[in-house]
Amino acid sequence: MKRIFAIVLVLALALAALAACSPEGPGVDGEVGMVRPGEDSSSQDYPNYQYGDIIENDFVSAAEEQSSYFSLDRNTASYSLMRRQIEEGLQINKNSVRIEEYVNYFSYDYARPQQGEALALSAKLFDSPWSDNKLFTIGVAAEEITFENPVTNNVVFLIDTSGSMYGDDRLGLIQQAFTMLLENLNDGDYVSIVTYAGDCRVALNGARGTEKTKIANVLQDLEAAGSTYGEGGIQLAYEQASKYFVEGGNNRVILATDGDFNVGISNKNQLKEFISQKRDSGIYLSVLGVGMFNTNDTTMKTLAENGNGNYAYLDSVSEARKVLVEELNGTFNVVAKDSKIGVTFNPDVVDSYRLIGYESKMMSQDEFEDESKDAGEIGSGHTVTAVYEVKLKQNADGEVAKAEVRYKDPATEQSKSISVTCTTADYTQTPDEDSVFIGCVVEYGLLLRQSEYKGQASFGSVISRLQTLNCVANDQFRAEFLELVQKAAKLYE
Image (cartoon, rainbow, N blue to C red; front, side, top):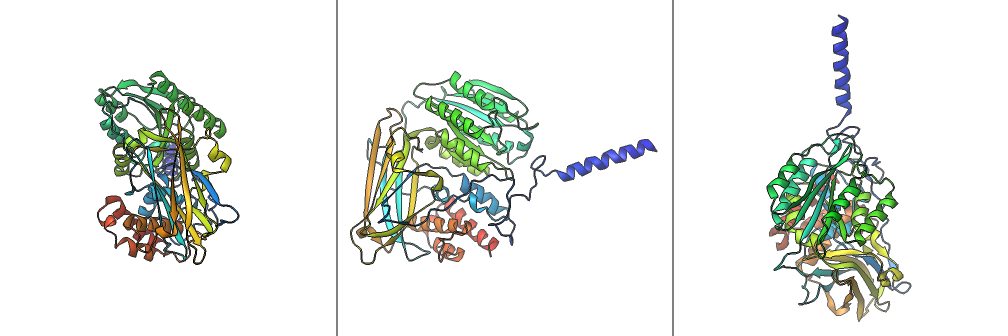
């Protein structure tokens, strides 16, 4: 009888332990950090989500401060994370909404660089849909690189295989994603795989691009188990990258994690310094986030920025293909290093201006003019967009603003610049479809952020405008955006 009782007791304790754990791994509550419809996203606690507070840029008097400066890049993680949450019927933590990443998730039909140039600039001026002000947009388009003799890639996959990575939307998705990336490998490329969980190890040591089946098999054999303690994990990944370093090639570590991030250097400043040193030695870092409920968004974004890489969030196989196949040329091949922009407004024409997004990328004039200051990277074929909301003076006429982008040639480190000027004559009451679409994306972001600057913004207005655009009907990602806005409208009713 005692033996039966003991067995029953053990089973009861086991069931209780299972009930206490979510499918996301030990100690993770699937409801924590999210906002269900009817809850207040501004006051909701997000203990498992680590987002930096975003303090929106305010309107600035052009008479008091004519210029603004910030770093350019093309991270997109904020958008795809939002997409997953909306698809699952969840409202959004407003500090996860980086509007510039929403805008830059999409590509635009900007004028392309002339032969021999890395970048081209364009500017547009049109009515703001949510206020009586104007929107001033600056479009940056990068040259599309094609190689007769492709640059050799030396890539290290640094993969989190801890217990929290268990699941098709985590390690399973990463395995599919990296397997798809193999499609674009050249015969002479190098691939190493480093994993970290209870310990760290080299799962694959410098395989060549001709060994795609071998690489894929190693990826598929990975399993998620153990604690997230990768003592020396990131050091080991960089050791592998150094071991197969290619002069003049693309040397890159790609970190894949659900955000429960511990790779052996626990101090964030030390980690940033370590990655910055490796960046300066020619080894870059890109970051892929997966999963939900324990996303360390702040750290992943910071690491990618200090490693001269991109930060993307993978919520589906489709997104993995977009990032690692369709846009791989831009991810791997930087055409403009340390890219930054300075915009100077004419106080005779402009009363005040407000930069929408890029809050964490702001720079001082000294930093903008300092050629040694690290800034963002723009990859082959990429487009990057900046949006200002501008209050013009009544009956003002003439130059509105001048934008200057400074960057370095990644091969020669030579500093270059390009500029564009916008005048009141450039204003149009009938903006092109890209401009209308950008306005819709920005307005949607303001609504999700519950921004104090949202004015007359509404989901209904965004939906109505999107439904008139051919570029939405004819583009998979833009059509999907319309569906997201429609779902969000119901969540926020």
